[in-house]
Image (cartoon, rainbow, N blue to C red):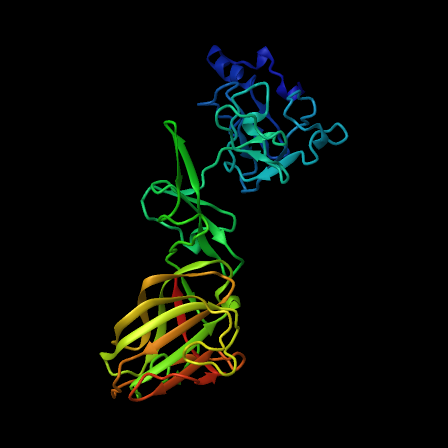
Length: 400
């Protein structure tokens, strides 16, 4: 002990001072490097306990962080330690850390191993625990228990903003697991399907609404097409004529990868007299391999290539346009979009009468692909060839 650490009996002036000097025997004060161990610079030793632990204070009271070194670990015999992590017999390559005081609390109840305070490194394999006494993965020597995001309310589904890429969310009430699929800017929330549960000697397989594990479910999300401000009266139904037939192609490269269960669409309309109604409307959806409309296309879909899964999603409905903006149409029959083909939208206007007060759809001007096709006439529903439109497609939203 240095001369400063010694206490001579002659220094004790009175018996009443003896507890003070006995306390100082258990203290260490290092003057010049701003580190104080279990010692208050004022000399006040009240509420101090000898051997009660280690306290590191900011010695100069200027708010500077205390930096300290954790000593060499290579003398430990813990079998879980990886000896390849040591360098030149001096312990870990990174021997210490810097922290603001009170940031970190480490607790280890074992005096023979480092398990309670082990730091997780970049390439460590984390083992979250096993069931039924199984042997853990042999490549893992670090242990961690964790919980994913969860909800105990039935029907709760996360949104894209609720999750990070690779993160999971578990709906405990419904037994459903969700994650993100896709790439930056086009993520979608999907359910990880097919959960097996075994109990009381029986086995059941849980899926969503009776579908197979690969069948998409409604995620309460919306895809939005490129939007423009061009006004086109003929889309999707032309109020100036008794009947009209229009079709639109949306490419898979626009919608994004991954199958989607479409349960409605929105289309932006403007310029209509309040309460304007188109009677007897029908919407159909299908897949096609075409990226745009080609030549000699007909109302009956002639010369549209590889049309599959043609589905009437909304039939014979009256469409009331109360005000300008996106008009939402909820399907009577959902459509499972496969995520790889183009989506073909077919709109049949069988109103049978023209009415004044009609407006227009707000359209995106493309001039790259022939995204739209139309035919309209009075007295009877059109058939045969129509007109392909290189320039304009309505502003759509797809609900899935």
